[in-house]
Amino acid sequence: MRFGLLVLLIVLLPATTLAGAWPRAQGDWFVGLSYTARGDTTSLGTPAFALSGSGSLYLEYGATAKLTFGLDATRADTGDYSALAFARYPVVTGLVPGKLAVRGGIGMHDTAAGTEQFVQLGAHWGKGMETGYGPGWLSLDTQLDYRLTTGDTVAKADLTLGVKPNDRTKLMLRLQSGAYPGSDPYLRIAPSVARKTGDRQHVVLGVELDLIGGSNAGLTLGTWLAF
Image 1 (cartoon, helix red, strand yellow):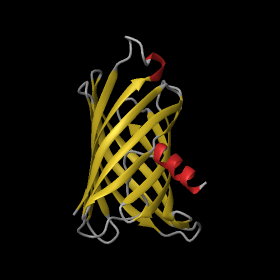
Image 2 (cartoon, one colour):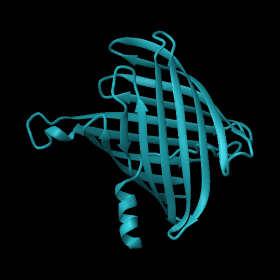
Image 3 (tube, helix red, strand yellow):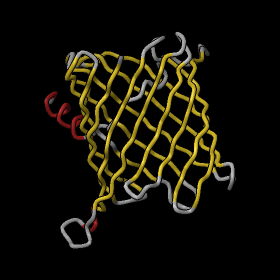
Image 4 (cartoon, rainbow, N blue to C red):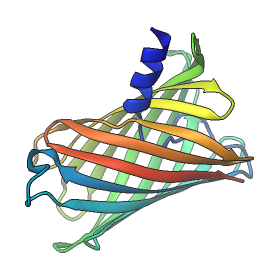
């Protein structure tokens, strides 16, 4: 039973993990690099099947014991890219268990249709817990982007369950959801496993699968560096 659950977690995990509600320690850096290749599962095994990919850079720096600065950037094979600079700060409410933080940032999208700036507001909740497989955590990350040129909004929410069965391995299961203007809302399961390969380095392998609003599947390979 337990072995079956661990296998399920490995198959259903996310490509990267973010600190979310937990601030980065003062003076510490975190860098996440990854590349994801995706394809439409409805054309799998036919001449029409093709892969598209994107690379990502995620950077955090603990400016103080509570204030974290970061950069979140993605570039697709087509040349389209998105970049966001943000700051995150914990909030004490006493209304909910666990940790709560808010995030604000400004960024830009560049596509064939042009360049557009946006501002982002986000909220992050997380709680550590003990499981039968080792220490774990549950987190909820939400964000709302406001596009300054068009006035459109983009809403996203990710729910993550993580467990650390040993000192070298982290297993995570993430559900990603969102809504873009002019598109149906989506729901995606984006699993991954992170394996420690050095004092402060992990290799990350993940998969993603559209459940609602699409028919794509993807494979991600990445690394985390902390210093």
